[in-house]
Amino acid sequence: MSELRTTLVQCDLRWEDPDANCRMLEQTLGDLGGEQTDLIVLPEMFATGFTMNSREMAEPMEHSATVAWMRDQAQQRGCVVTGSVAVSAGDACFNRLIWARPDGSLVHYDKRHLFRMAGEHERYAMGPERVVVELKGFRILLSVCYDLRFPVWLRQQPTPGEHFEYDALLCVANWPAPRRHAWRILLQARAIENLCPVIGVNRVGEDAKGLGYAGDSMLLDAKGEALVDEPRDEPFVHTACLSLQELQAFRDKFPSWMDADHFTLTDGVGNACD
Image (cartoon, rainbow, N blue to C red; front, side, top):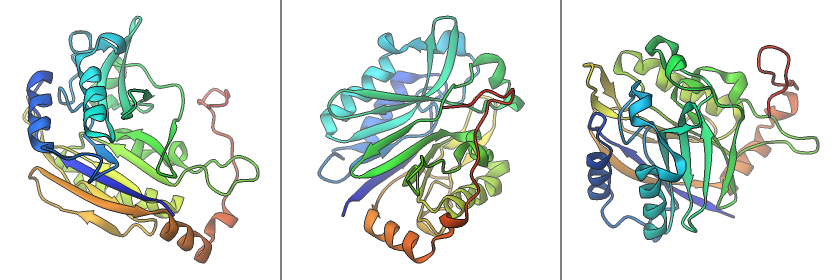
């Protein structure tokens, strides 16, 4: 059965300085690659910090130096590299989670729930659909920061004849220290209710507005118990394994999925979401 070697990269970020952040991350990651890990997870907006200056910082996917950097890193290191960046598409900007594979291909998820308390909903467009990717036998649902507060959006939605839609939930974030308790509890809740591991990567340091970030990056198993949990506000790189065999054994032993409620997800005005 498959094991997914997952690397959490908790780091401080230089404000609106993609070149400096990419150089810092290359140095931080060193020679880490496919012999040691399958997946490198960077925080939300790792190239800029949580900027609302979308019109200046966002670039089209095909011209984004940061997206090109992610593709190059995935190819050079021989593993998937993921994290969110500001991108533009036509007249809209998106907080876009990029999934860069070592074969050069890209998948993306546009953040659905935009953090209105910072005006994100006025600077970025809402993502239209959920995205599940596959790696080493694991189906992984992608999410970004504020999405974590909305359990219906992240709830397992298996197709007829299947018990589970995904096998792990990934959430990258710039989650401020004053709300660190909510971050930790919500990560655990999403793991427990969906019977799946959760990968949560947050930043540390302070942004240009003086807002501090406590990190608390975590890798949780399907019981909500920590495989990686370093509650400290310092940078770190930590790799741990998720076991598909152990996950399936737990789901067989504790089949609460058999009593799950069935529902259809809509966009709030009656239209079904993908």
